[in-house]
Image 1: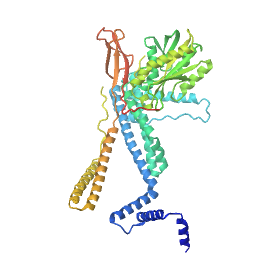
Image 2: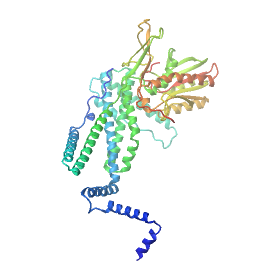
Image 3: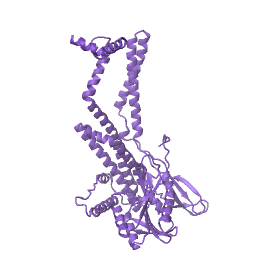
Image 4: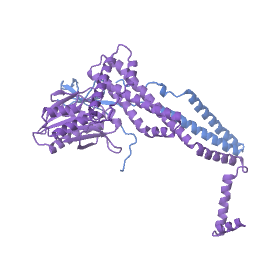
Length: 399
Length: 139
């Protein structure tokens, strides 16, 4: 009696046609969801499959997602292993070809690939830059000594190129090992969040690994790379003028430039070398007792997606990457003498920066030179002294 | 130049067991399709529909896996784009473009000019990249 009352209240507002439709819909729904024992065999199987699907999705959905992610990471890991092995093979072949070692260099190369550097303690940050610089110097000396031992017949340029080749192989080895670590950890713990983290950054990691893979070949053959665009700009400006070596691993040429005297600085090429532009700029400023009207730094910079490769932009500040030691030194020196600093950058992505120089980047050199001229004309007076520093790896670029 | 890309490596090989499974699935799926036609011709429509369903699923799955395996093999090659070296004579302007050779570097003095016998200079080393499927970007 109560049910009839509720029923009448609920459906009183429906017209007769609407009521018939509603009843038909409910019947169809009931048939779809609960009609297991009746109907033909196909419908019964389908119903069972739907139930099984819902059950699996509810209770095992996350686990299935985990396995899909693991499989995706596994695929990338497979590719990373291939790239790592190729990197190692190229490094060993290049050492055998150039260095003419007496014994098989494989064992030494494998040991080199496992080298690590411990960054200094920064609990008390005062003076950490000098500690970091010392550690990096020790690392650099160690690498150079190791290359000399592995490849005794290599000249200075070739030794620098080999050092860069081994460093690229080392980076590939490290990327592979980190991804493998998280993959195995995720598999062991079946934690969605460990796998999810690695799966999310995987596209960026793969891009970086592919960039290092192409860098490896460029280093092995001594080809100019995208990062060397700053050094190339400086080389274009100083070519034909006498150059002298300045600390550390850099060269400088005194060039008459738009009625001013320009000290053009770059790392010493054509071997793979970035030098220490911080020391070089400091040396030139101190040689001139701080009487420098302006400093212009040229470097490659990472472009944002959507920006054109080889786009030239201008700004202020020390345009230099790396661990920060050189930037710190430059900033300290210009602060002491109150010298204004300008920057010209050439935009490219990470892949272009470490792989053989693209035509677009090469063509941007003339645009960068024009921009430097503009800055010099606008920011300095005739007869002033300026420093033009081309930053980057000078592999494949002479002077 | 001797820049040979990836030679045969364990990573590029496809397991023969996987290939066997793919081809067996493909064969079974094709057989199911043939049987479906036969069942339809003798008037057994329900069986024909099931066999057709199984056949299509089998063909689709095996071709997809085969395609993916091929794609993976293609992806596992490190591409080495051609690098161009431009040599110029500063005196007469004669220009020579050739493939990069080990030992080349920008501003290196190389062989004498064919026209004026002056020493030529490497003025450019770069790679040209053809962007695949680059579409216009309205933003």
